[in-house]
Image 1: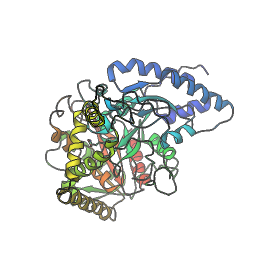
Image 2: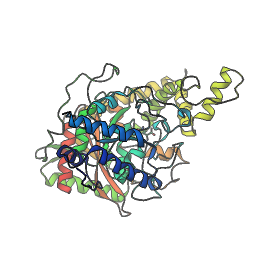
Image 3: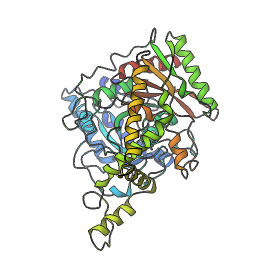
Image 4: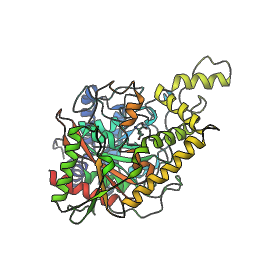
Length: 481
Ligand code: GLN
């Protein structure tokens, strides 16, 4: 013990092996990481809170547990948590004024699973308010910067998680993905982001945005860490009735470093004019590489892709309008002062507590659900959703995984889309389909653009097909070096 290990660039797997060998204690690790977090925070603005005291206490407890023979897979490993996932005794603010002062009375199921495996919770990461957005500019707390360029967004809504993992102030982080919020920031910042199959991971304790789309997943420095995190996080939970009663594979032990004979689908609808030239080039060269490595490339079609954005923004806003009705000034966090009566209190609280994007979504969602418009919008969107799901079912008869870009562009500049919601929404074109269909997807770094900004490759798998996409991502990562 006592050896100073340079944490920069180490994966969680490497850190776990240092901890296991005993040449690094969790206390040393966490105290070193806390220093890095403090040092980087003025540059990245990735955290809404750093748990200085409690993290060190947890680390000491982990070291003691190790001495006592405890063998948790994540024993003593620091994890950063998106600000919409409840950790007992910590604030859970969703980067919203509405939840200011709210302290969580309980652990989300993913947190209790990670806790049982020995994880240490070091901080809470910044996000778009209530996970609505794609740049983290909608946070009411601070503006997170892209670690590759200070004048560019980290993506969103899990921008703080991606920026901290890619920027060195977190080793792994949790995010949530309703329409791309793990994969898109991972792509913009240059880390690995996994959205599990709907039902793979319990959402109990995740502040709900759109319940038929939300999933929790890891942001990590490499694919092995992603597999390891998923393994710990997954499993049925009686507290989330949508969680699936299926066996959890040993994803990390099963990782295969080759893609020989794997059929990889290329959907023509995802390679469209208007995409950044550098993104297009990077994805095509990644596909060539996979083919050189022995994968079989198959042309496929996902014909309803063009309706995905409209469908997503109807369903997601509809569900959000219902989910966010609970923030009324009575039960959680913020309450506007000087109200004349209860109705006035609700109105003032919601007017002052929510930011403008959240209000826009509540209004849109209320509209598409209102009688007279329900059939035209919400019901139609549900039907199109079924068609999108069927597109994937058909495609996966002909291939094992599907490769696409994560986003049409790399990280954009602050302010570039903030005043034009539609422009912001259109950036979600390649990610929302996986949420609508409920299948799994991963974003893995595949190159850089001419400005030195990361480009991510997306792999879609069928429902419960995480192992297949993790394998392809792992083989690709290895080959790329
Ligand atoms: N950018 C998408 C939206 O604004 C996705 C958000 C998410 O996945 N939480 O809704």
